Length: 137
Image (cartoon, rainbow, N blue to C red):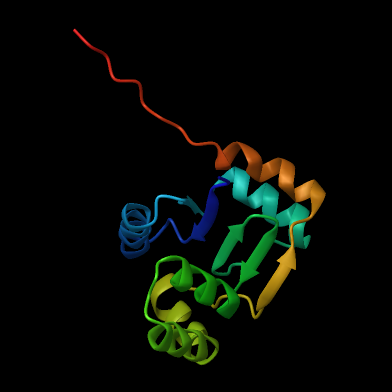
């Protein structure tokens, strides 16, 4: 199974905690901070100019903005009416919320895009499942 990657604002404690919660609820999603060098390289390869946005990389697709909200909530088995409401509210709430919480407005990019071959090389190492070996005495 391929790990999905959830790109989040790692500069904010609230979002670091939210990413940790998502990880506990969905073992097939790996959170990766937007500020990481690997994600910045991926975003440059995928979009040319790295957008500050909510992004879910799932299989061969890159979901951005409201599409990422929809996919993430469906993946977490959130009730359909709640997921639809969040998806509908995102476009109008993202800018003021981003300004207050992130200190910047998310890019106005929404939709699902095919994963670019050049961008794929930057994310494959992040998709690898890492385990910590347990030492026995």
